[in-house]
Image (cartoon, rainbow, N blue to C red; front, side):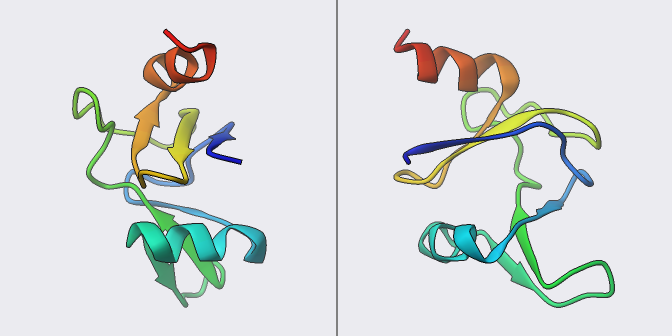
Amino acid sequence: MPVIHFETADTTDRTQIGEGLVRFAVQAGRLETGGEEGKYFLKHADGCAEDGEQITPGDEFFFHTETGDILCAEHGEELREGK
């Protein structure tokens, strides 16, 4: 499961995730815990690893579990398609 597709970002800084993704987020240094909104979050305030494009609320994005990279929809699709 190297690339995970998120259909919508919660905020520009983070998106809530379930327990199944916690290990990957920890390995990537992208886990944030606690808060009124939920227990586990994937941090993505640094934007797309390819071009720095900010991930904004409602945007789809990708999380590469092996590298820890966050990718915008365009670059994530390219990665999944092997381009």
